Length: 83
Image 1 (tube, rainbow, N blue to C red):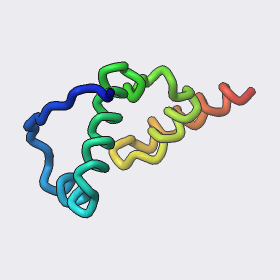
Image 2: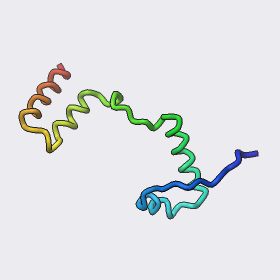
Image 3: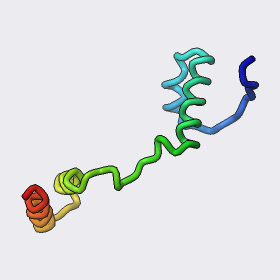
Image 4: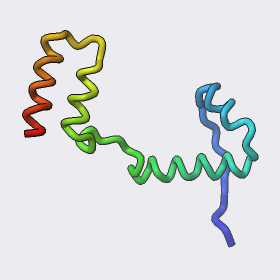
């Protein structure tokens, strides 16, 4: 026999609800169940340490708010990491 189920209420963004609108109730329930299990198990947690230093530097170089001087410093740092 399967696990007992309950109905919960949650406030989610309207856009997310609209994305789920075309799905059947069973599908929505399975999606929410998987997402909650992953969240509670911390499987979907983002950890900045998982991103390589080179990737972080590359991302920063292309940010508009970064000054030209800082971008040049970041380029030099990136080159040093590749050496």
